[in-house]
Image 1: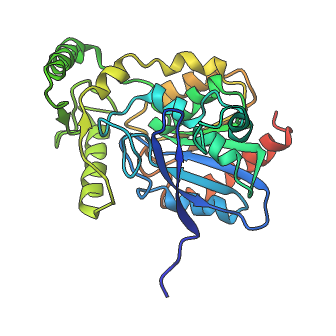
Image 2 (image 1 turned 90 degrees about the horizontal axis):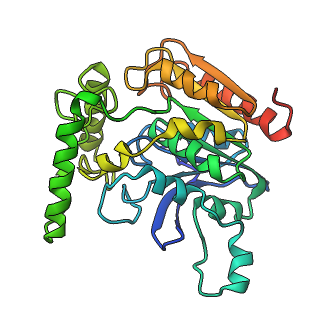
Length: 325
């Protein structure tokens, strides 16, 4: 018989009314802790992470794995405009309880931001919610937790901190301004592939120009060929303007929750040295998991993935119990 996944499709709203679509794995004998999973750059929830989500679910965690704003089945326009600070706000905004707010402001929508949505679920212990993110999603999760102190822990898997290669900056910025002027003249936003077949992109992000860029191109190509629902192998060019102004390293010392960073030994997309530099800036209790023999795009799959999940659960138990040193 085919394997039946325990998730169900749900939607929640951000504070501006944008719909966020996700898969919810619900623990039957709750309230139990919950993990909010944020995906990598331009990825949809169907890619790579469902097996990880199900592994956490089988260990007693509610899980919400979602498509970011403008990506996949989630709302937002222009499509595939990846704005990391907006995504961090969508993930965990300023609200501290939708139900309480609705009593004083009935016009509010039922759910406000992803964290608040998860915290209101009957199966969830609202005092034991953690953020888990891979690559771009790991950085977004940390930036969210830098301001919103409700998450009880943050897990960053191969987080990405550098986006613009200096030698590409002038040409890329000129192209961005040209596109902005074009949009002011009522033209459609310019769309580009995240990576060319040579593994490159206008700003040189994500290992562009090297093996990491080729790996990323192959990931996007495979996603297109697999027919993942709502996946688009295109970005709005203005994504690069958002990334050029993004300084995630500067947020790391603002994170107060315990942090686990999972660093692949063979990461060709996010340098190991940068990941460790980011972790060194964290002042809260922290733990590094060094995944030997793993790369950026296979960290969550294949050999070693079971050990990674086990190490993560060990960290979460300590973090949620307050015994992490």
